[in-house]
Image (tube, rainbow, N blue to C red):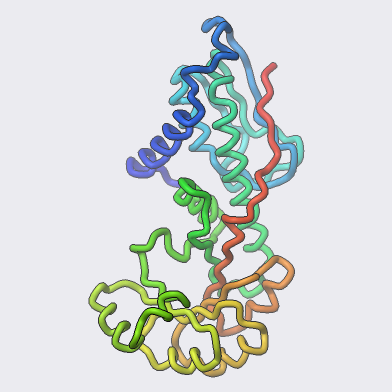
Length: 276
């Protein structure tokens, strides 16, 4: 992950808000610990996974105490074994304690997101298909989770409402004339993605000037029929795609698979920060 000025500021603001939430300036427990008391700490993965979030952890400890030294033994995107030490922190004991929980929250969440994305990337056999995560992210964590997914090759469906135009079932219930609506949307020069629920929808959308057809919750029979109908418009599929069934749906003719669970159904990896 390349860190430029803009990204550095995004991470810094994310970390700042998390530290404010934790009210670190009023840490009563460690208040009486002498500021000169030094300590050495390790971050240990208690289960295997993929490391991600080092820049967030660095930002946490820098914000808490710029004199703390943080040394990483692995890089973002590296596989981690159970009970493996990934990071060492040294400096003020009080400062390490203040940053402990927030740093682990970032590392657990982002490493988990990266681990799940990597599992899906490794599982899918059709490497011509691009895996996408969705906007089903933890509030405040969208940019960070997107970075975790990008680290292993999983892209975003769209990071915000402004990036592209997605016309889903609720929109379709409101729009009176979809053909006219699409023509009007072209002036915004954004990719247009329209959801199909039925084979009839697919036949209709195949004739429109759109950039992608989204087949949501199509079973295999409907998916195969749809792929025979769609001529040149890229196809995205979504809905109940799991590690167990992804290769059943990763058919020739499918360009994208979007998976909400990559950022929504995460299991925070078990890890510890231990002082010695």
